Amino acid sequence: MARAEVITGLEPGESARSQLAAIFGVRIDEMWAWSAHVQDASRVLELHQLRIAAKRVRYLFDALAACFQPAFRDQLVVFKQLQDHLGEIHDCDVWADILRRSMRDHLRDLNSRRKALKPFVGAADADLGRLAREFADETRDSPLRGLALMLDDLVARRAKLYRRFIRFWTRLERRGFRKQLEHAVAQAADPGPSSPAGESPGQPPDPPPAPTPRPIAGPAESAPPRSNADDSGADEIAAAG
Image 1: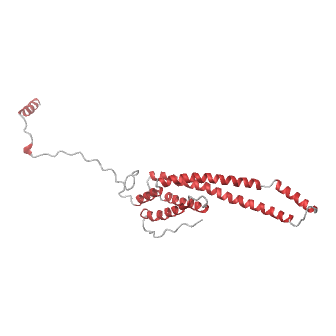
Image 2: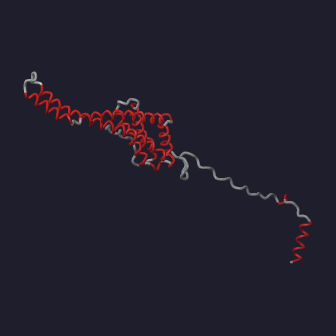
Image 3: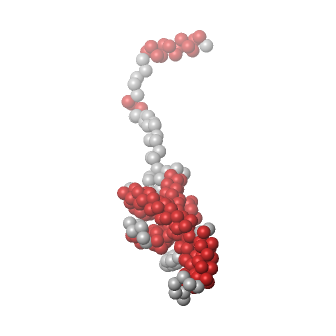
């Protein structure tokens, strides 16, 4: 497994948010460097390294989740899907190596039998018949056939899984998945003015509603004159009292 690149230039006294671009920049670059090999099914080690690099990016997002909006964190399921695709492919590669080693060990035993048959000339020696019978008994229930069939099945399964992975990766590339990650990191690193939970970082909050205009009193001389009717009404109220 390739070692993760060391992230340098971080300041212990600075906040994690202010250094997100440096942290994620290195890990995202690592991931996409390995992704250059995805179109070659034979690049077994490189595909495995891509899976590990994707896991590192995912763990970073998990560790620093508080810096990102919930709506973005929900999209990180993509990393789990990517790891699952590559993990199944890697499982096939690992099991294929195990089966090949097992087949090689059994073939080594058969090779020793082959060497035992070499000194004989013709069919005159009874020991040749004995060796032939022993060889027949040993190979009657030999696991070689089963191992070979399992290996063939693994090769077919890996090819199917790889085609499925390529379709998944192509969709990610078409939607600009890397740019989405980098944009989310940039927003989280510089969210702008603090905003209530649920609002996207970097987006200004809605302005408060404009206050209702209050009437402004004009000069005293501009007030409308009171009518006699108003005065008489006031006199009647006073008399009634």
